[in-house]
Image (tube, rainbow, N blue to C red):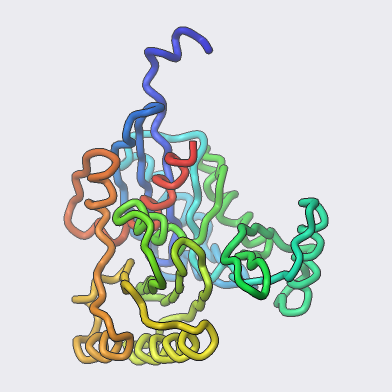
Length: 316
């Protein structure tokens, strides 16, 4: 260890979220053994049609507009980081739950087995994919793995946009998983089964967790309040019939506050799920880690990027 490192403040870790309506950057700082602190948040709107999230087609339809917005984000943030964590829309990745009765001992064998399973349902070639996975729930039927598959060229669109502004993406995460990280930072591990609803103006994702393990994930583009009510009903049915669910201990909403949803639709959702919903609170997450100073309108917008920044910081 260099002696100078004892007196050097570690650089903030920056996460940037590129979505269809805006780009959000969050900078976190904090040395080893010290709680991370929120240093800055920047939100820059994007012109309509600049980013069109999709699993199979071009996402950055107007890359020059994205590059210009990124430059403004760095100006607002007050820094131009060299390494960042990148948050992309859920539509970019296909989330699968793959289960094996016996898990190969060698990582290379497990890689090949997961790729073999993906070939059965993948909407594009595995050889053209960027694939990541983590161990999920362990059941009497074997070990599950949460697998995210995305087209390599589509992920590269986002990475290249960042690189053009001088920032290299060291990690890439889907937005809803960023929200789940923020939930854990806010309330810690949640016992039992709980439901995360990540609702935005453009899409909705529902994720069921059994403790810390993801056991269900569904994403759908937004087409009015009705689709969210329908998704909640279908998810509740699947949870009861296929997952042996006995009720959610908590229902947590990220992205769009409950007050922004149609009142009657939201009442139907909570009645169907049998538990009152709560909105993820970034301030509570940061109370655990440091100080926060949110400006109006940025709270729910910054949740995915904040969650990713906090999760990477705590993993160090």
